[in-house]
Image (cartoon, rainbow, N blue to C red; front, side, top):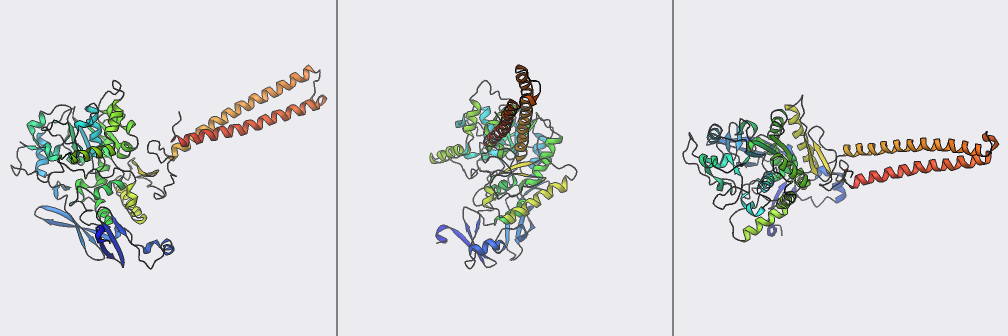
Length: 524
């Protein structure tokens, strides 16, 4: 039955592991263990762990691959996608060092250019979609998601240019005059052009780059830059399926924890998420002016699309006030489900292309792949690499990791698998708010209620004293003892009112706090 469902069965430490073709390895527990036994002894279950694996280089033919070695069996999984080394940094095979060097010295960039810079699988296509829609009046029919919105001048559609891959022809001093593009990333070879063609593209030019900071082509910082980052757990899972079936680590049978070991290293394409993120963040904080570089997370784009799109429009100077519906059209045009639907319809009509890069687009899907042990090891390794390089200046990075949880470089995340939402108020990504913000709002509300209560208390005391005095004067009595019955009744009445004010104030404050919780922390 497993064979008919396309499972691959392997054995590890006397446990069977069933690997389904389109998913991560699924662990089958030995049948002699009951569910109660598994709850008592979770370590007896086959689990993912970074400690199972070692990384070793595989060199040859001026190419460098990486071997991920199973410590117990010696079995090797080879990662050979990023085999082109550019100044020590692994790149896909269609990006060569001589090409990058020629581009750095020969390409001219302009103030009107806009770079979308990301590490792989961190929201590149989504951000490109938003930018192109904003610049194209929100007309999604003019984009081609099958080819990752790549500029195709023959079709008349608008699109972006992956500069390092596409602008090749006419470069001087290349080692080979003819550069093959047969291995170019899905559809993006359609934008291949000469330096002259690049210079003649209409403005503004929307450019893509995965380059680390030291290899970024615009050394003079003329162009604007939008950097999109993504929480490392989801980014790792998405890279597991990258770039396409038959090449991706998942499709070649590499276990997920083996890939995690690789992904946390500098042997992955573009030097790894850690170096890429921290170096670009350092540039953002130290080098670029805030009107020249925008930092945004994939989780913001997915969870708060309207707010994010407006921020992007402001950054690239698209006036949304003259067209109030533009942001709404862009949000609809970049919705993940809508983009997949458009791509699927194009394939059904017989158009050429691929939509394997449109996988899930979810925040928090990493929990399907990470065991708690693997998460803890992954978290420690991530944060230790940031701390080791930035001992005196820890980068301020926070990520939504789904299900109401926030992960930070400084503190990680407590109980990431407990999805009751103790770190954030709402599970709705549109209305999430941090626990610290919520506590501050609670204190603000209670503070206002205490001020209001004290004002009412002072007013009540003032009324009590003067009313009783007036009542005494009206009856010709000047001492309370001369009018004990009236004094006692009035005192009890005002004490009752006072108690009612206390209860009412607490009830009113409680209602306000509950309203803040239900509205995700945003008071009207």
